[in-house]
Image 1: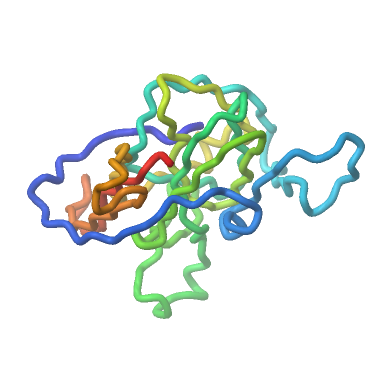
Image 2: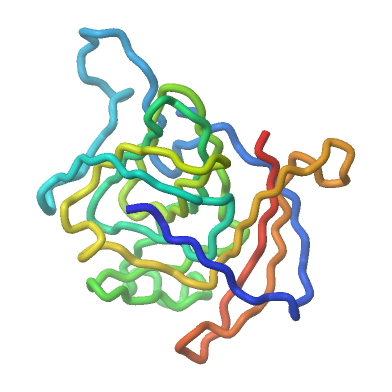
Length: 229
């Protein structure tokens, strides 16, 4: 499933600006989050360059998603704790994905060691909410797909056009059992900035404090602007 998009009213908050450049997804740059699977010759034997999948917790589901009106912004980020996920655009078109490293934890092992209390998900596992500074935005282009490790936080797919088709490999019950959304973490918005602007071709993260909807806890909210190039 693709991450849903929404907007939050943050006009009254004073931003702290951090500059970040979008990263081209390669096997090396994406290795903390999963794998980039590229074209290989017909007849190649299975090896470490192939997608290392974990699909044993349910019935695999391989399908095509038709996504419309997915501008380069997001206000929630999600992870799947019990399954890897593969995403790729049909036709090799350029798209983007926001990610943060997996943060599923054993609360008994980390208690008092990280300065942040772990959160228990509705399906039982514990995780540490990703920090705004840990979010990266990747650009994916050409005939390749991403395999997300179990627990990798992700938002997207995002793209510039009106619509795009993606193939998706997950479990038939992924979104019922292992999906955990962390709302109000980040509002990410991408604009096509002029080359002569101060922050052209950069992402600008504006971190704010916002009271979390439905609870008394404060959490980070941010806005990111990044070039499409």
